[in-house]
Image 1 (cartoon, rainbow, N blue to C red):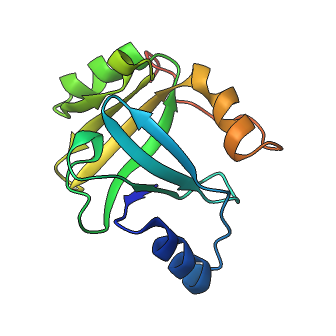
Image 2 (cartoon, rainbow, N blue to C red):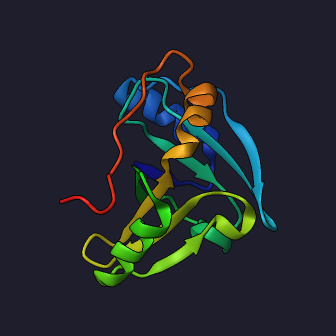
Image 3 (spheres, rainbow, N blue to C red):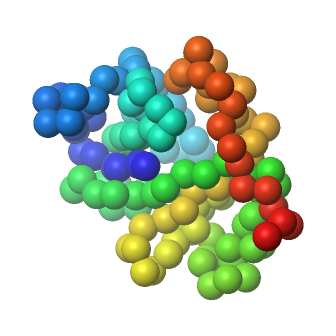
Length: 144
């Protein structure tokens, strides 16, 4: 579950106080021309993700805090993107042109996105954000 926030430290502090959430160390990143700061909760799955980034780019309007997406692992990102697009959930951003195997799809009914992340990225995620974690389930594309 991801929220975009204009002040990462304030959001971390407030969620730690209000909901006893503990955090990993924030990291900086860049995708294309967009710099960002990101952090994940230490306990999970499920994880809470916070992203602080300038307005525009993959996360749209980041000037106010808001719920941005629910993230899911997928066995096949291309097939998942085809499935979601075909179901009326348009792709709003793909990390693939930037060497990142994920995509956001907008769901009007929740006013937010579904993020599909290729399962091949899970070992790297675990290494960075939950070193002692176990593999998480994925949507197996093509199965019902």
